[in-house]
Image (tube, rainbow, N blue to C red; front, top):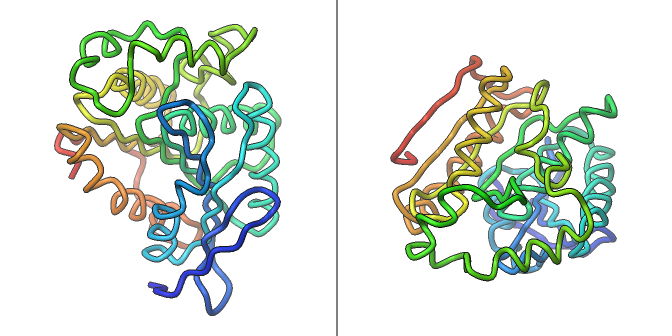
Length: 251
């Protein structure tokens, strides 16, 4: 794989791109930190490594910190990626909500969908009534469950909390591309990933669910698993048969 990665700042955010020739696919990377804000430059170390091991270009999208403006920004970034050829989408936490919301919007418009999507510790239900928000509050050091409701309310604004574009868990999941979801057994957003994976599988979507024992184990495994999944579903790559995989070890 490419070892020389250059980073260029463009109108939609910084992009990590292998040097030395064209790429087969672009990845739209949607970062979301615990404050529910888009911080694309903080995602560059992950983007650079993902570009290095896959040979794909990885665009870390900028987006505004309020819904629905954030989704509009992500939609524009997706169109930019798609204009360059085949593209996939990867999202973390709030970025996972935006990635899933983007899939629903594109599907409903009859537009070209990403070749696949990877959601890491995604926030997929802004009603915030998942049991793991309570049960894992003490164990999760990555998200402050006590302040999450206020931050979620600030991001969602006057939108209905069950709007599928805000809370994709409440949407119709039929017709989505292959999905890989990552979660840790100790995180407050665990149930969002589990419920979304279950509903997507019931809707006939190819789902690869990876649940690690904790955040440290998840961090060690997810980049390699993400790269393998992207390569598997990239056009011209080796596509697997339709299946749902539940791997509690995350391996």
